Image 1 (cartoon, rainbow, N blue to C red):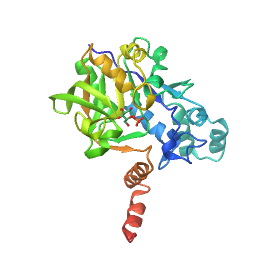
Image 2: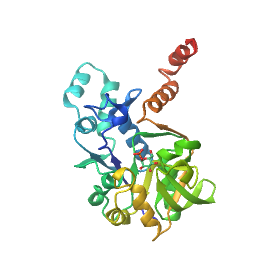
Image 3: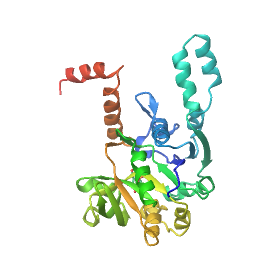
Length: 289
Ligand code: G1P
């Protein structure tokens, strides 16, 4: 029987250069989808998928993330005193969301290197990795869709989605064989291939479930695309030794680390809100486009 996935790792040490100047002094993971930071959106997805223990891999200038999940004594005190019970509970619930710890990636040497910082945290247990700027809007949380497959096959799982045309070059891409609807056995994978070299239109989306042998594979991984230690290359090494699966996610994926993707995600999320949806819909209808 597969072990239960209780731990999740959130790499959040990136420089966020695609979102400058907003990310000059504040982390991109704190950009809000309407009113909720990206990192909270993805931690909530993890918790809804069975996670109770979280490690956030941070870097310099990331203290806003730690403060966000901490108790804000002054704010809570003030809200209580003013009788703003709902807001008090909202703020308090963020610090109760999961057991959260932090570690720092001292140098930005790539996603594989960032994930390697979770070696002690994972110990001998399988764990999930979520990239907060990949927002997946789905009825069944994206990670939960993957946990179901991990539990069935007892092997590592990556998330995938179809990407049309040249845009595939911005992703890791898998070569895979469908074993049941939306579940694939991965045969090979490559990080950011040229369009002509992409083995398929199945892009890797920022959700992974790993077993602890990923760390040995990362140790054996040489710098790849962009001179960085790529997690895709480490997974590729693992493929030689064990089965590896991919789940085609059911839902909509937004690249919230990109300015246009972020705007689209914001509009989509706002339209679904009871308090904002109709006002925003009226405004969008009134635009002379
Ligand atoms: C990372 C991964 C890539 C994956 C992508 C998903 O790339 O290296 O394999 O397809 O996330 O968002 P990045 O976007 O950090 O360059």
